[in-house]
Image (cartoon, rainbow, N blue to C red; front, side, top):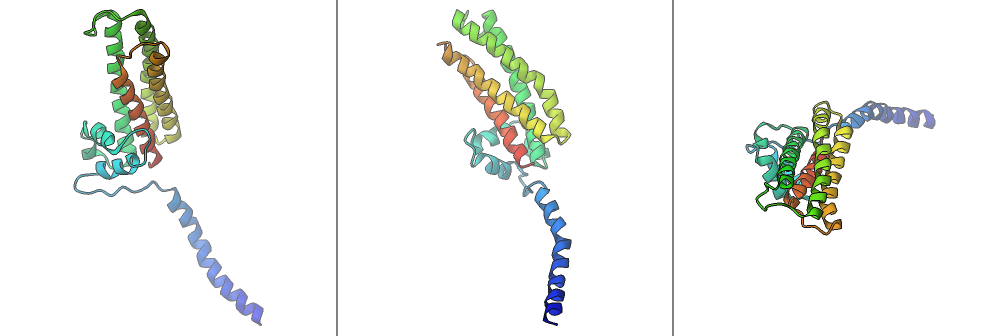
Length: 197
């Protein structure tokens, strides 16, 4: 009799728990919520992704995403990641144009020396790769293929870093340090935002 009593009480606890268990798995798989205030999601999102980042800070996130009014229309981390991808695309395009101008001698500083020119040609190829990846990366973000998008952004961050490292290795002064830094940080910002999407 004692066994049937403990069996029925166990069954009473097990059945409701088993009914709730699938809901716990679904809840764990849902994207993190962003608290939307009157100011939108920009500040809380940037605090979340930039607060503990070793690659960029909260201010970089706010400045970058705020530069295009991202807080106004964004409703999720994924929306903000799409903005970061767009900014990286713009960076790659403008950096490529700057590199071309420098190689033609029209960068404002006259003709560049041979070591700098060699590094710039390498960077031009790296930025061409970033630009080629961007449409696929943007489509991956829109389509919810976040792993694919993160991988593309990590490749872009590595390319920006390789560009800058090439100048150090070639004993040349980089005329694109600011652009390399921005590209690296924008790519890492996109990765961080997708981590919460």
